[in-house]
Amino acid sequence: MTKLLLRLVLVLSVFSCQNTTLPKLKILENEFIYAEASFPQCHASTLVEAGDGNIVAAWFGGEYERHPEVSIYQSTKTDNGWSAPKKVADGKTENDAISNPTWNPVLFKNKVNDLLLYYKEGSSPSTWWGM
Image 1 (cartoon, rainbow, N blue to C red):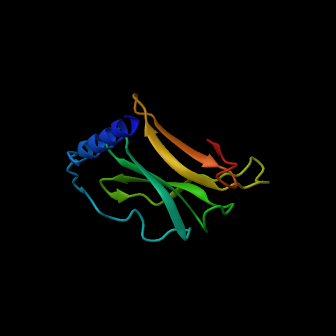
Image 2 (image 1 turned 90 degrees about the horizontal axis):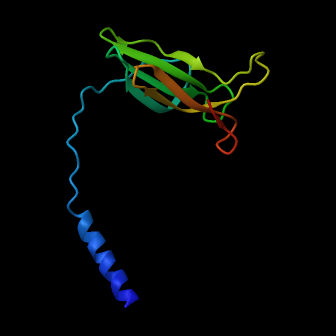
Image 3 (image 1 turned 45 degrees about the vertical axis):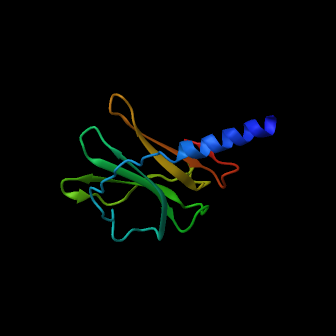
């Protein structure tokens, strides 16, 4: 009886997956944020529409993942195009004695239009912490 019930549940779950519809997506723009930068690699981009209607992007860039000089960069798109990438977090201690790589930025706009940046800092995913 248990095997029959399990088979019935599996068959019904397969049929329930067939009627899914995907949303229609429209690409509004397709462009690069920058042509050249002071860092050779970038990864983990995030986008948000700011309260003024501009688009803000952030990502981490540097020599390679886990390199101590990997930093978080930010650029804003206005009617005049994208601003030059600006370093907004670098993982350095106050006296620059230690430089930790930064990882996986996330931009978030709250209900009062404050723009918040969250990211990870640390030498590896097993030891990083949130900022």
